[in-house]
Image (cartoon, rainbow, N blue to C red; front, side):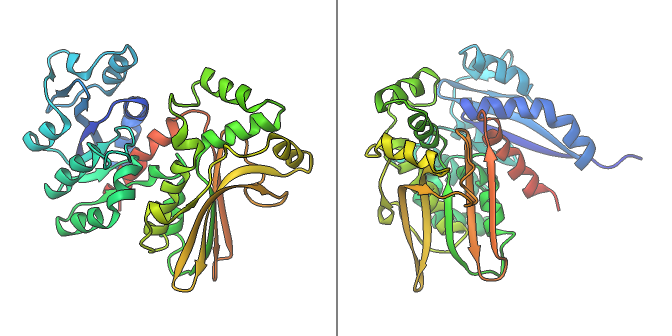
Length: 346
């Protein structure tokens, strides 16, 4: 007799940039995951802003991705599409894992993601999310809720894309005192700063960013340092055990950076980046986000336009660093797979 296959029923809420790529990953990696680990990852439900699709025997994730790539709603999935919301799916069907991948919305209380995640955890459904909003605004509440209901909460994709920055800090550095964390967790600002270093003006760099789809219509979340600050808050809470809030981060974005200073840094072999730092002070940490010149030889000094990284300075494990080159959002989407496997594999 062959090994027993364990079914993992997944509902995906949010089938945008990350969600549809996650579907492609499920379609491509599903057979391998089943043969290697004995887990059959079944996408039984999907929800976007226009409707839902549900099939207890499993949706075809490649078909879901294809619908979204054509600009259609999952509601148009043949034989499975219908009106409804992600909350409707969680309340009406049997599911093992919620993958919450809606856009970040810090300005409106991280909704609708926060309510959806609360609902799942209260129903003893494991949660995996790359959405930093709920983790920034309600970290302790959600961790407590998960513990009370015997559910798992995973959010490795909330910091530095596909880089396992949180796993590295929270799991692999257990037992250490982390004196300082330095991170470049935002791709957009690094991309813009490298364009400035290459000789472009601010207006030209921003224009290039918009043309290539790097900048959002409203780029303030990235350029003003909010994204980096949010990721630093997650590191502080989850890795450092420090109850940080977004308001206490000393934040300075990159809009005031002089392009000439960026170019001079490159000539010296240095790198200009928006650096997020947590520095131990007494019983807590000082949290800062600001543009800085990273000198040659620093672990983060070799990051390219599509690079992110983190450095942990510890008392017993030395200085640990990790970087990633993320050419497109696929690694960020793949963190949902990594989190699911972390929940279900011994």
